[in-house]
Length: 89
Image (cartoon, rainbow, N blue to C red):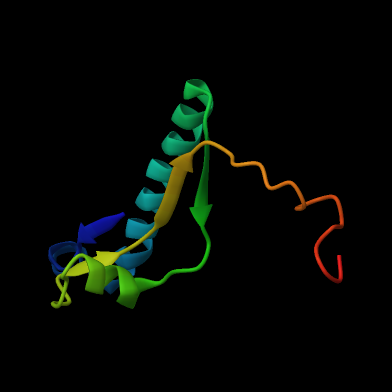
């Protein structure tokens, strides 16, 4: 989730920055629920790769910020993932 956020900080102050993450989390919760209802899976990504995301989307100013990364889709079976067939597994 990418948002233009500087105006909010100017109007509400720097403390509002955490509210933007809360709002992103609320959107993420809705995505979780909707994905389950549709019979697919989803996950929020707990580590942020802001710079690579900004590069991919051509974001060069500080006016926009990557707040939350989220994936939605179906599972892909990996035959050796849980069977211990990987080297050292």
